[in-house]
Length: 103
Image 1: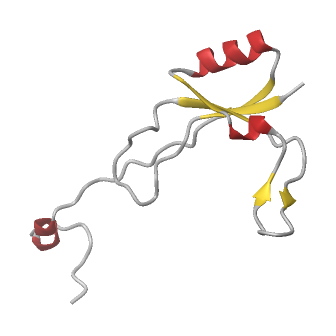
Image 2: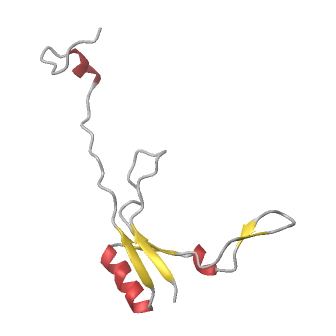
Image 3: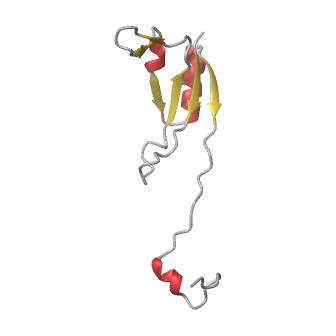
């Protein structure tokens, strides 16, 4: 019986946008060790499920699919996003600053 994890991907570190972070992904776990080709040095495996990533609109859809297909799964909850207060450059020169001047 294959096992899988269901998760919501985090934001790309090199991008400022939130594209492709709203979907839920069902990704199968590795069932066997990876093997190194002695001639070329490439890493491979005979397990084709490692290459499968299924996208769903909601967590409930992913769980329903895994249940219907007989896949044992675990759900990883997404981390809470920290919303930072945007400051402008002119805020450094306000008369009513909460922090004292450092220079």
